[in-house]
Image 1: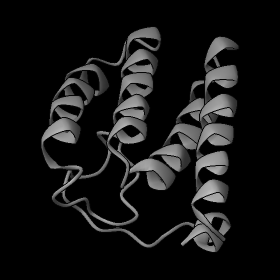
Image 2 (image 1 turned 90 degrees about the vertical axis):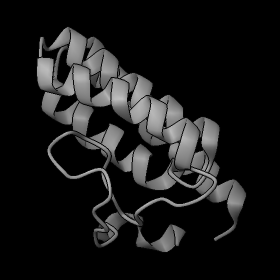
Image 3 (image 1 turned 135 degrees about the horizontal axis):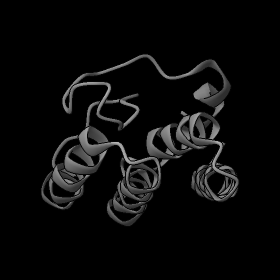
Length: 111
């Protein structure tokens, strides 16, 4: 796998997440946004885009914890993406900002 495959996979997961969000399928949307986060977390713009869409999900689902957490994560993505990111972290407020996690089985081929 190369960087183009990783980038295409990121945008595909983002697209699926946004489509699910539009249909108010919040669990499905969140899962695919988490996948997008894992795939994009080493790239400043992709990383930040993912947190933006997680913020939108928080707003649409009226989840105040996710809203506040994603605002913090958007700022952190600007400050830390280039320096350090915890590999495999899914990006939601249901996990610590700095927790390393195993890469999901379906995403391992990109790493």
